[in-house]
Image 1 (tube, rainbow, N blue to C red):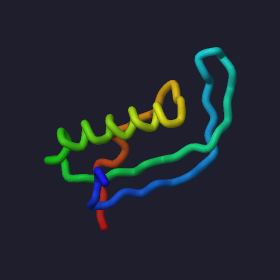
Image 2: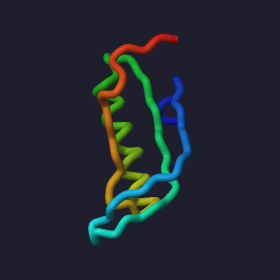
Image 3: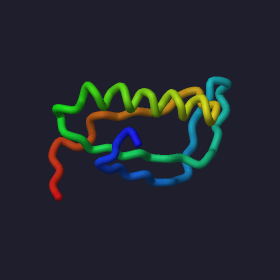
Length: 75
């Protein structure tokens, strides 16, 4: 509901090295959000809210965020 104009959610299998040095494998999710650059400030807070909620709900140490993958897109 925070991004009513659309999003893409992909499921996968991921792994990471936890804080105890143990490799863990688990289901992973990739959330793709594309929005106008003018909405960057408003979107930042919404994305952080999603990350915080996900960490709490699934007891995660961290949730990766990358903001610089696509400079130009077209539809």
